[in-house]
Structure formats: structure tokens, C-alpha cells
Length: 133
Image (tube, rainbow, N blue to C red; front, side):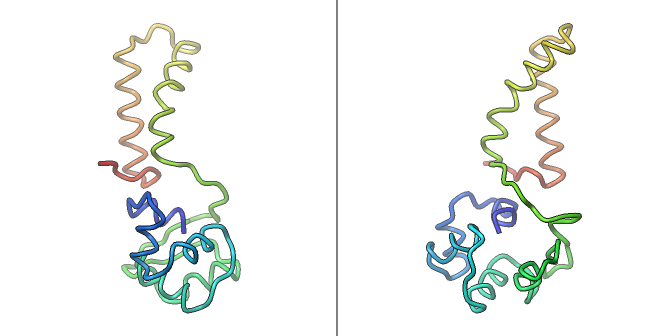
């Protein structure tokens, strides 16, 4: 659910809960991996544009979810870790600068910044990091 929420550009669980017609407590239980009612899962499926039965399938071991438009998410394996896209965007410039200093010291700061910009564009294109306002 965290992956889908982030893919939809929703950073606040309260907004996600409202979109699904759930209390933030119930919604937070789902993101924490706790069991909720089938009705609650159905509301999440509807609110997040997933095909009916997607939550039950994941609970039974499926490693992907299909959206109402036929798009498959979590392809190739279950999401086990969560990376905050905002934090990733904040941390990447420093990490790239440090790596460039060690492995490509001839790069200028401007070149490292350009690499970072293209790196983040590619992550957004791949859907790893949502578009940020």
C-alpha cells in the first residue's frame, strides 16, 4: 500500500485514508501489515484503482497487483523496504558528489549536478520516485 500511495503522489496517510473512505487508524494498520476487514481492503482497492481482490491476493502470497487499467505493479517481487522519495531526492546529490570525488575526481560540480538531475528524471520515468511538486 505504501508503494501505491507514493506512486499516486500521496505523501500523507491522512489523505490516503480519506481517498479510500477509511479512518487514518485503519489505513495505517494496512501499511503496517496488520489485518483489517475485507470491506476495508475493498475500499482501498477502489480508492487506489486496483482490481477487486488484489489485497486478498497479496495476503495469499501474490507478488503483484493489477490496476483497473491492466497495469501491473510490484512486478517481480514483493516490496520489502520503503524508501521515502523526498529523502532520496535530498540525499542523492551528496552521495553522488562523494562517489564522483572518489571515482571520477575530474568531474566538475556542475557535471555532478547534471548527473543528479538526469538520475532523478530516470527514477521518475521508471516510477521509482513520484513526480514532486
